[in-house]
Image (cartoon, rainbow, N blue to C red; front, side, top):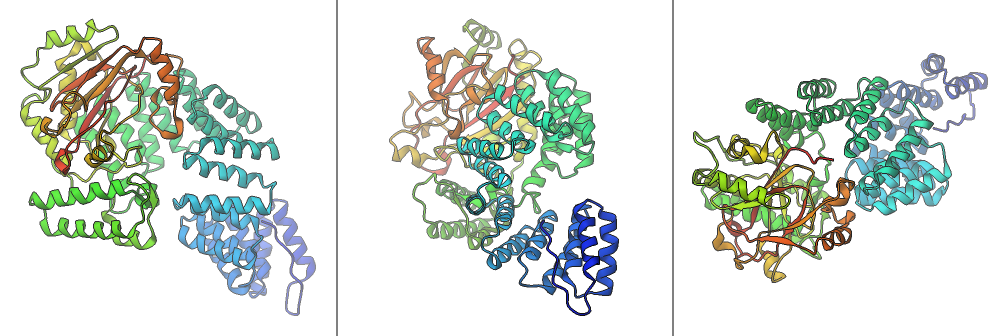
Length: 636
């Protein structure tokens, strides 16, 4: 913050006092600055400069509530002082009062349109509010006003990365580093983007450079640990996380990440201790509760695991979510609206709180009619009006059905375990598929749960299909029972591999009609040992019985490939050509498994696979739903 001395008038402090005050602050003598500024403000309460210094000192020493009061006084005394408004915005932002911070920065810019720092700080606030397009515009304006503004270039990179424009993000970080080579944060941010691009060796180099420039940079040590973990260098990852924690003992994210590495190393008790420490430091740390749930389930503590999954769900999507500005609350698509309208109508027709769901269906139809979609899958930002209209009904678990564990096995009794196991191992890499996978009771219960539960929060995929996940409402006693009964049923296939992921995807039948047939998930492999994929939609919904299922190639992802290269699900990380070239080496040998109700495919997760063409009937209950379970970890 650039502080300027004011012209003196009668009844103002002396020029010498102000000079000494400014020198104290600029030279880091914050205690002396606070004492002198307090003395001046008491003697001359209408003098703005001392209040500005007090606000800066309070903010620098972490006393943000006091800083807000001091800065508010400064703004009241000098309402035309753009810097005072910007300083108030800074402290409001630190307190999480983002809407008020946005207003303060906007006022600063109105008073001083060429105030580059205010434009950049406004960008940071807009980014935290989930207004990424507006944040990008603010950073761009800051850079136009001040081209050598390295921090604005780096912050622009963060926003571009969140928008999925990784190439542009990389360029922004590189520009920041060119302007300020010793900018450790920009090197670390560049590492994050390179990691997401799958260029792990380059990411390691960026994190290492950040640490060289700033050895006590705990975040860079933790980021380095994440990349080492992805490369399978678990002992080194553990060391990096441990170093991050030594530098910053209250670094909850590093404790949780260390837990993930310890879990992969099979040290489950130590992993639990790390997660517990993360939660003790940050009680609203949703991801740590999810990680705890996965680990507790692997240890056989299913009830405790479900409790932790539920805490995660409530923290992320309950009455008072920790991140109300998450993009899934602020953005929407036509496909998402269509799905939610159909689900509400289905629930009303099923007799579940008929009036409530009829009213919700009408409300969502009204919002849909007022939004200008260029295509069904375009993701748009909700207006303030529409956010208020949808309120706490949008992307929230407002209706979750019970899915209790069964007295008998959830897996079909008629399965020939010996033959299925033999078929799996007879395949060159490990593959088989079975019908009548779940017991009739389990199938009926799971289908009703997935059709009726409002847990389909993820709509950001190409093609507009909806995703539901274990950590956000999909967890239930039945879900965990299916995974465990499957392991017990086929011990030679699953060995000691535990459940790591469980998700479901629901596809829009109308997309099939519009495109004659619809393609689902791109060709990819998964980070696991064993993949189980099964379908619960009635076969009568499938208009092409020879298709609608899964294509599995007789080609494994090379062990040296990283997750972002072989997974290939995100549109901004399209490695399809590279994967197709690898498949060509195996002469494109493949197994096509058509969709069938209650059919499961069990295969080596390292095999490339993709959704086959989909052509299903219209109607909510005809939407194709597939469920995926991943067990164990990919062997590197």
